[in-house]
Length: 205
Image 1: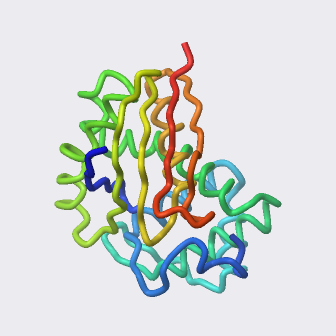
Image 2 (image 1 turned 60 degrees about the vertical axis):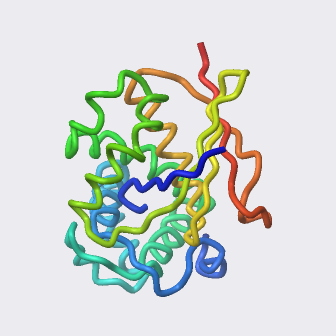
Image 3 (image 1 turned 45 degrees about the horizontal axis):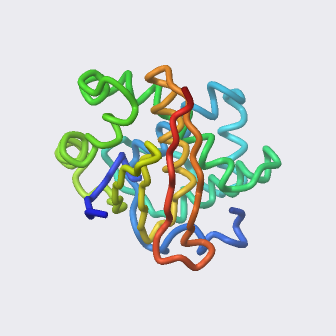
């Protein structure tokens, strides 16, 4: 595989928060804005306030601001508890749900690629530089891409944040945006001790 930097606006319960992110790192405010929008749209305005109360956060996030990783961990943990889901499930839901509003905010990122595969492969050379201009200092996970003979797109993910479930959600959301169906097999995971995650994306005809 050939290494590429991949950054898409980056991008448990409280007991396992170190399992997801490194303490002290920063997340851009747009991530919090998107999470707030999706929680309110799908679960009601009061749910976002409940999550802020449970996480003991004020919730005043600006899109260009930078905030401690522990705040997103606390919100994900609060959502997992309230919705009776795992933190990974919450992250997958968020990643998938975030694609439509991202497409509205940044239509140019989605217009040129003709399908989900091209979109994913274009992120390093098109989206990554533009996001850096818009959101200076945003966190940057690292992806590797390999297309196999079985027509899979294998994505290697490595990041101190270990938000591979969020990456899965983004992949699934991108497929939906382009009217496609995919399966994402998580063949290796940093949470299980692997050096990097390996996400195998297979398109369903």
